[in-house]
Amino acid sequence: MLAIRTIHLLAMAVVLGGAVATWQFCRRSEVSAATALAVAAGYERAFWAAVGLLVVTGVGNLGSIAPHVPIAETEWGTVFVLKLLALVGFLAVSQVRTLAVHRLRLADSGSEGGRRMLRVSYGATAVWLAAIVVTAGVLAHG
Amino acid sequence: MDDDPLVVWSLATFHAALLVVLLVVGLYPSGLLGWVLSGLDTSVGIALYLCLWASTWWTNRQCLSELGEDASLLAVVGLGGKWGGVNGVVFFWVLFAVAVAPAFGLRAAVIPSLLVFLGIGTVLALGIGGFVGCVFAALDTAAFRIADRLAPAAASESDSG
Image (cartoon, rainbow over all chains, first blue to last red; front, side):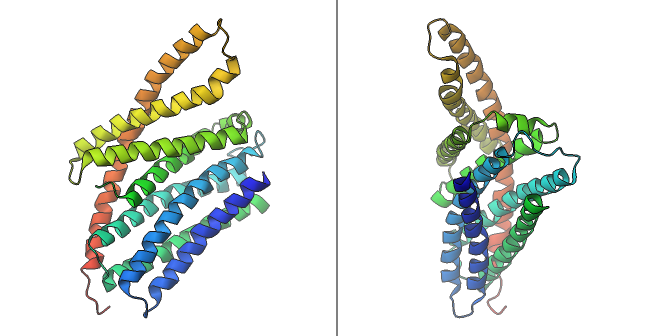
C-alpha cells in the first residue's frame, strides 16, 4: 500500500506542481507565446499520464479501507461525494483545456491572446486541484 | 477531430478515468463500493485498470483515424458506439482470462459453463461498451466544439493585451 500511496502523491505533485509551473511560465513576459504553447503541450502529456495514475491509485487507497468505507450519510461520506463530483467536473474541463491547447498548436498560434488563455486555464486548473487536495486532506485527517 | 497523439492520449485517459470515477460515484451511495473493493485484489485491480486504459487508447486511436477531420455528430456517435463496443469486448475478455477463468479452473466439467458465460458476457460487453462509447462520443463532440470556440477566439485577440 505504501507504493500505491507514494505513486498517488507523486502523480498529484506532477499535476498540481506542473499546473502552477506552467501558469507561472505563461506569465513571464520574456517567454515567447510560442514557447509557452510548447510548454503547455508538454504539460498536457504529463498531466493525463498522472491523472490516469491518480485515479487508479485513488481507488487503491480506497480499497485499503474496504469493506469499512464510511457510509454516504456520514460527514466523511458527504465530503467524499463532493470530492468525486469535483473530480468529474475537473476531468471534463481539463479535456476541453487540452483540446484548446491542441487547436492553438494547429493554428500555430503563438499570439498573446493564446498565451492569455493558457495563463487563465492553468491558473484555474491549479485552484481547482488545490480544492480537491483540501477535500483529500479532510478525508484523510478529518 | 483528428488522431493527433496528444488528442488520442488525453481522450483515452479521460474516458478510462471518468468511467472508473462514475462507477465509484454510482456504487458508493448504495453501500456496494466497500464490498466490491474488498473482493478485488489490489494488483488485479491495477492490472485491469491498465488494461482498460490501453484498450481505450487503442480503440480511440482507431475511431479517430477512421473518422477523419470533419464529421457530423451522427457519424461521431456511430463510430464511438462501434469502437466502444470493441473496447467493451476486449476488456471483458481480459477480465474473463484474469479473474473469472482462474477462479473456476480449466477442468473439463466447467468448460461448457465457462464458454456459455463467455458468450453471454461478450454480447453484454458489446452492448454496454457500445452504449458507453456513444455517450463518450457525444461528450467528446461537445468538448471539441467548446475548444474550437475558445482557441480561435483567444488566438485572434489583439497582441496589445
